[in-house]
Image (cartoon, rainbow, N blue to C red; front, side, top):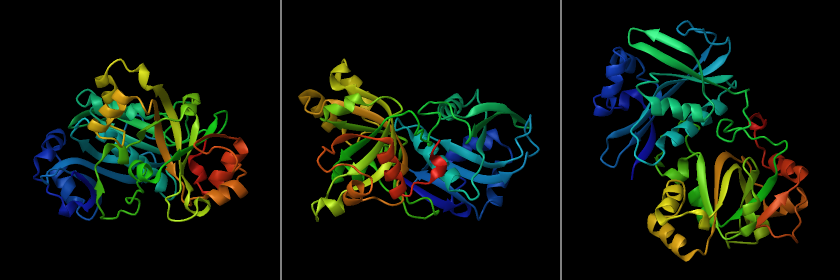
Amino acid sequence: MENLVVQKFMDININDSFFDSLKADYVEFTAWFERKADNNALVLYSEQGLIEGFLYCKFESGPGNDTAPLLPNANHMKVGTFKFNPKKTRRGDRYLKKIFDYALAAQPLVDDIYVTVFAEKHSYLAELFQRYGFEHYGNKVTGNGTESVLVRRLDKFHDNVDKDYPFINTRGNRKHLLSIYPAFHSKLFPDSILFNESPNIVQDISHSNSIHKIYICKMADVMNFQRGDLIVIYRTGDGQGAAEYRAVATSICVVESVRNIEEFRTENEFLSYCLKFSIFTEKELIEIYREKKYPYIINFTYNAALPKRPIRKQLADDAGISRDQYWGVLELTDEQFESVITLGELDRKIIM
């Protein structure tokens, strides 16, 4: 199994062939790498112990002196070095999630995130950043050539699920409660352990660490979801005690799209859509497609885990969600949603 791990530069093998292209793009790369000996990077290793991805971020203040035009006189997080070998698992999305995690955990909060990239040579990378709200700001010219400066302002919103990620818009969008069984929930929403630069290993699994999630169910009411709607993920009871105390709200997500399985013209089209972000294996998805027992597919972004997880009793008594209603799929009022995120102590800085 491939693994993501936080390591100091001094413990990373700079002679791994993964770094050859970076050395070619930046003549000073080796000397820079050695100067960063005590800094941390997020590294992806293959089963064979070879490097497949690398991310280093740093924090800066002020306009700097190496871009045209100069950056705003603000607090920035720079994506200093970022590269990954694509492998049809949306590794880029998973790294983008970590970039936003780091930016939002920064104290004080940064005003923007920026990256410099040789856009023509690495068009896929530039397009990935632009999908999540990075905009061309200017250029950086050095002896290595001209790089595009892409900036994601954290105070600018586009009314677009991807470009606004990880922020959530609570005004004008409907809110829903969506129940997920514990076994599925644990695979789809693993707790992040990288916020404190822990050396613990995180499995490199698309559906676990990605921004986008695919959930397949047989609850027809999910077809009422619309792009931009907010979802409170509700993990049902685990059988270890009364649901009043064991069932909890855990996360906030934003709907990208919903589809009926009958919309897919072929089995391969269904697999292509679901496989990267679903908890199910290819074999299981083939069975789902052929049997049509679970016909509803939700694609959503995983925006935030609730720091505190309100139990069912709190959701009923304090947030006012009626115990008499069906909690599988349930539309919430603005007041109920506000109560849930208050009980969950959601960081208000991600709310538009």
